[in-house]
Each structure stands twice: as structure tokens, then as C-alpha cells.
Length: 239
Image (cartoon, one colour):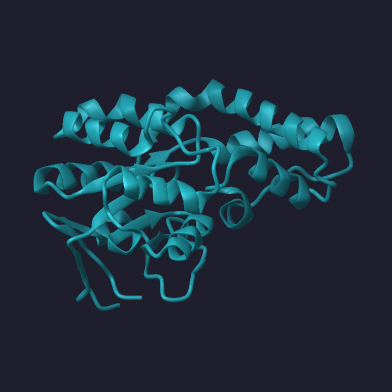
């Protein structure tokens, strides 16, 4: 893959869950679904594969993810079941949330971005990811600078879990007075990448698990080490 393209003069928008933070969302979805199925459909399987999670659940608002998880299990995602699973999953996630860590390549990437003064911003549909990241940034080089950029990116609520992903990305761009077509989005979820393309951002898909997920015209990297923060943007692979 050529490494010739440079996204200079761009705002680098970073997804948080799965891109920067190794959050226990998939285990929580699996355990939550098992609990709900035990009450309503004990003959159904609660297993969600890594590929199913990244294709259908990751990067989506909680209720949307719950509906997708129920569908994977072969259940009709009625509003009552969706809400039940969403609540149970959140309870289980919070039990493990403090075990969340930065991926090593994410730590290196953020350290480099702070040193270079790369114009970074953050976006998440999770109601918890922003707070979890905020607790882990002070230990990094330039942690205070990164923390300020996190807070400005996510606004007073600390997340964009209540709006569709394309609108969340537009809000992040507006928070920094950048047009979406001058933004590079780095996301590990196909849904996030497609939302970025919808609003005119240039997306990069992070495929940590080698799932072969792809979107037309979107470069794919296996690790953030393949992306180089620059003072004016990001060294990019070519799709």
C-alpha cells in the first residue's frame, strides 16, 4: 500500500471506543444478551462474534446496538426488549469500565499528536467513553492540551449518543470551525466510516482484528502506528 498521501491542513477526528480505548463493550453486550435471552428465549444463542459486533453494533447509539444484538440472536427487537437489553448492557459495562485502558498504539499516537500540535478532535456515540478517556489523558505527554481538545470536541454533554452519527460528526467539525471536507476521520467501526463519508469527511478505517471490513475509497490500517501525526494533519495511507 502506498504511503504517499498526506492529509495536510486537516482536522483529525478520532473515534474513542475501540479506536483509542480498549473498552469492554463486546463482553457487556454478550453478557447482557445472555441475561435477556435467559428470561425470554433460553433456547437462543447469546453469542455475538467479533465480526458481527463491528459490522452491526459498534459505533451506534445504545438502543440501535441493542436492536441489532437482538436481531443477531433471532429475536424481534420490540421496544420493550430493546430497552431491557440496553439497560442491562449498561449496568454490566459500568461494572468493568474502570478496567478500560488506552491501546498502546493509541497512547503513542496521542503522544505524537501532542508533540506535533496536530489539530485533533474527538467524537463518540458512547455516553461513557469521553469521561473514561478524560481520566486517562493526564498521564500522557501534552495531556492537558488533549483534555482541552476533548472537552471542546464533545461539548457540554461529553458525548453525541443522542444524535445520528453523521450529525455528531458535523457538530464536532462546527466546534472547531472546520468544514467536514477538511476533516480526516479515524474510526474502527464501519458505521462510523460510512457516516464520515456521508458528511464529506475523509475516513480511515482501523481494522484491529483483521476482519476485512472495508468501504469503497476508504484506506484501511491495522494499527494507528501506520498513521503519522503532523503539525498540519496526518500522514495517510492510500485506499
